[in-house]
Length: 517
Image 1 (cartoon, rainbow, N blue to C red):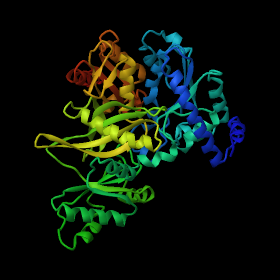
Image 2: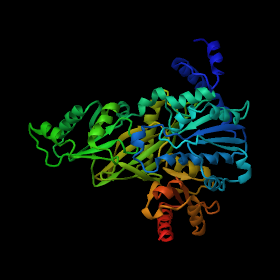
Image 3: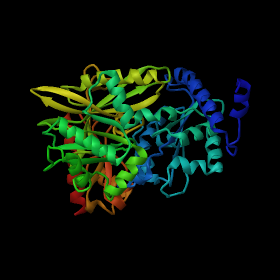
Image 4: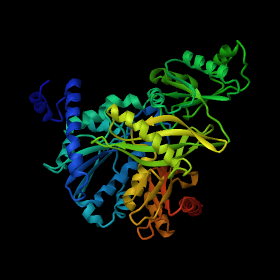
């Protein structure tokens, strides 16, 4: 298809459906044009622009449903409202259902050097008014009038782009219909974020991984892999089975070899005990259904790493439209569940003993991803074992999307206007002071049920918990809407030391329990 044909197609109405080939061609052209926008507009804080925020979790809805309050996770990217601190930036934020005005005011209150009214004039909140279980992007695509309203709120003849939680074919379709680039990865490269492809890439980069197998396609192959691992490591107690497209640990299961024989009957024993010795991370997902989904997604089987000193660090990287690689942050993830497979929160920065080293591995993997055409933010997770005083890092997975450590770091950066120094593993503000945080999406207690957003904000204000621009310490809450129904809320507790950050987190728990009881 020639350039003239592309230009003719690019102006098509939101009501017109492009063919898959046309859509991909237009998307690639939009993405190539994004380079110039990035180089000219992004460095200028006074440049006029429009940012369309589509916080859609376009993921497997059955697995997603196992996360309590997942419907309100669209609110995690409300940290992007901090972009309004740039006085000529306009933000259009979309959600499945409307966000309470009190929550919006809560975020706008913290904009440095900008009044709330000034920010509100540049903020457009649009909703699908649809609480169904489908992804937000699918809902938007079903509403041509809503897409036209989005276009009406884009500054004419000014740069604009879309930012998403993750990019799939649905987000690509939306980008083409809106005639806007996405600051994110081409969905044709999404396979690089699968468990199998990540293991292959790690090995190609010379980064060690837990011993195991990728491209496992069936229950029978899972049994074969479990058998081979046990023969190879007779002392092995557990192995992990992971769906290729699982997330937050919800696509994982742990097989326990307890009382397994080490003779020719091992394969038959594992076959017989596969269900009974399997611990599935996702709630209300039985073994039969787990393997049905596994055979649809395919996945990996690998050894369950154990050690006296064990950590789960991650590095967050970004490849910008000009191809530059940045190490944005490192975290020590807080994992929970029976076998430590569920992401609960994170400490920032990661342990100084290995933060810089984790960052260097991130650069190696990022260079390989950049060569393959990856764009945007992504996270690389590790499992680290300390052996004789030395940390050994095993690469676990690549998340080609924003993740659980994205919004806390964005909030810190927007509030303090600092940067992470990958060489030292420290975060510095402009005056040279350091900041740390403890973040979670899963602060939960039954007695928190019934607290409305206004209750939470009132409690935070009255007890001095709210983040202060004067001291540059305190707490920012997110997932506020989940509190009343699920007794669950997220927070970023920022402090001048790791201990101070944890103290802020602990104080929130203490205050909420006291106020509720």
